[in-house]
Picture 1 (cartoon, rainbow, N blue to C red):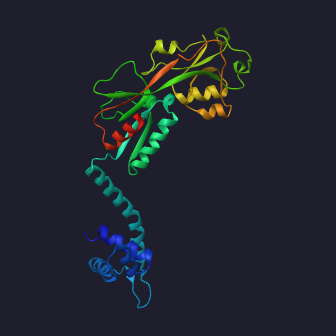
Picture 2: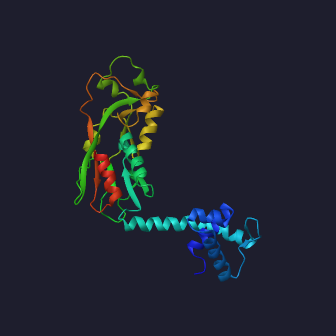
Picture 3: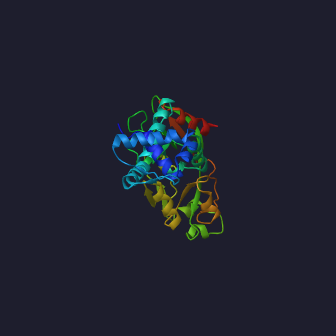
Length: 292
């Protein structure tokens, strides 16, 4: 191959530093060594890449300009390939798929993903909504590497798990909703008069579990978390919302916690983190970070 990564790198350095000596200083070699590499490339290609005039900085020929622009595209790709090869050599995976349920994307989880990227800057993260994923079963070719979601009633085989946190449900409504404007404590009878926004039945919540959250015969069932949250914010109905999920919604009075004449402190769902032993060092680091 006439055009090697080394030659491309030297071409770019000479062009951007403006001289063979400056390029040599960056490379830790002599100016004559840099000049020799460029000259050998020109001989092999039977082309002039630089114009050389005594006492002046080398300048690119038309062909040299074209090669320089192409080198700017090629070199980063070569470097990425090298980094990926080194990561495999060291046992570090190049990407991780993390599936998260909308109700469990707590600040702690967001911080953990940010910390993972800082610890492994060359890692690619594929963050998916577990409700949109084809399969919640782990260990399959298309399955996530790590799942963070409400505890499934159906347990998976060959999977490690850890109870990461819990959903503490709170009754909420938009400030404009009639229930939010009642000054006294609300009773179950008060709730029965209005539509309740509920999660749809899913792999993480069977009919019995969803019914345990029901406090109105009139419901709006949402199969996706974003639908659930947006309808709550719009005032379409009241609902239950994880206390720890979006503190800013309550701080900015976008949603209000409803005052009740009964206790809702026992309304909790555990949040589980699941993974298989097939994950690499980066995934293991993330799991240990979240568990700590």
